[in-house]
Image (cartoon, rainbow, N blue to C red):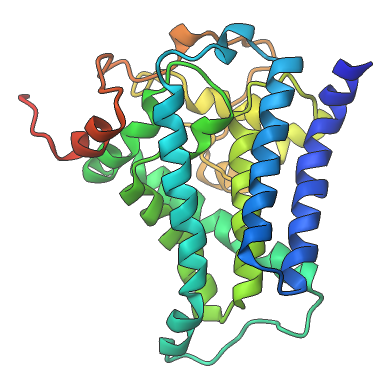
Length: 283
């Protein structure tokens, strides 16, 4: 009973429940502390679901990575929320007129922000696999040895900044209100948890539309042999456009499938991962 509830109810809880509360709070100008608490609740839901209905039970066992991944998550999510606070200042410097549809229902405004951010973040993500210096920053994210919720925020902070710029800069130019940005920050955090969760959930035909863990596991197949697929954050729309979508419903994954074939000894500590993109290697 509980397993089936998680299998079919976990994604609606996160997408509609957590995100819905975020939209409700942001529309009422709630303190950022409430949004932080909501992200904490989302992380707790993810961890609970991973233990009650894991895709692979062994992925729930830390491999000396739990502390490092927690630091990545805290640093990067703090950076996201702090960036929301400076949006009014950036908007004041915007020389273009505000084109944001401020009269639309708040939920519609958040959905519009998600759609625009999805294009920008997906495109930067794709570029990060094609451009050398961007890949060196992005490689941190692909060094994982197990696939679980906190992987989504296991990123070099400079790459996190690049993805944020790609997703948020167009929104700032359009004049996105700070309240919409706050709700968007929660939506991004929830999506990253869903994408990387070690949960054997089901979404039926929506797996061909939404960028969730069934498809995102293919993205983490050992790069550069494979893994240049399924770049989308919220949806797979741009993967269809870029012809980077891939899915095999019969494929199962283990830790041996994850990581980087060209860099099997990639550093594992937080500080060394921060420095690695700037370390010269012999060719």
